[in-house]
Length: 444
Image (cartoon, rainbow, N blue to C red):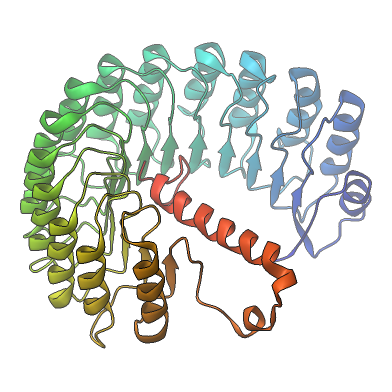
């Protein structure tokens, strides 16, 4: 990958110089005024090497965006930019959406457009959806946290029926209801290009979940689906269970976190996964799964040899659930990530899990034990044993990561550095558990 730069003045100079090594430009967070935006736009018009432009958190408003959009029209310019990130510029608003819709109508090279938290609202998102009817280059569109309603969902669903290039769409944290998801489902029944879809933190409910899961019986292209925070409950996942029992279902990753799923729903999902050979990642963090559901997943691990990531953080798993998961892992040769943070299991579960993971045959690489109810002295001992004997590459615990050679050189005066390292590790595991509204492991 080529070089990247961020400082404003050095950015302008580098862009104007058409430095062949400068392929990514990331501006520092802060305000970019209209005068500065115009200078950036003028420099971009003559640049042929920059592939990625990141202007997130730059306090852009429509007046700033206008000249930048002009430079991206790709008419009379040599712009070769493939990815533009304008996320977290809430002052862009509906006018910003309209400017970018015009860009999509003319630009022939832009592939990724990120517009999360830009306050587009329906008035700004609908023109973008209409532009997708004719655009044939965009593959990724992120519209998370823009207060979009069913009206925008209707236009996007219609565009999905026609557009055959878009591969990923994020609508995370909007205001789409079961009515709006009907339009998205209708689009998916026709569309064969969408590979990932982020719908977390909307208002789909049970009815919306059923609508979406039913349409996936027809769709054979969607691989990755984020449905977290939609109040699905046990009833909402029942149609998904039927879908997963069909081995022709192509889904490889699904996020169901924060959906009030209890033991019945968890047990049904676990039973379906005993025969499923497609799903690679299942996110169930922040639900209400207790020992019965946890034991069902432990039993599932004895039969499933394709699931690689199982996220169960922030549930109600006790010792019997974790012991069952450990027993399942003793014969499972596929699971690589298991997140169990913020569950109320104690010493018995922790000891059995450690015993299994210190076996040479364990394939687990990532484990999170933050926030459990193990005795702290025992947890420290178990963490040390796991560092020494297991094959884990990442281990989340209040007692920190495996000490490196550099860590061992630290003196007592470097305790602040150690604490920062522990905090950084905790943030990493939290990110894995909560997921992202962008393409990747959307598991919230």
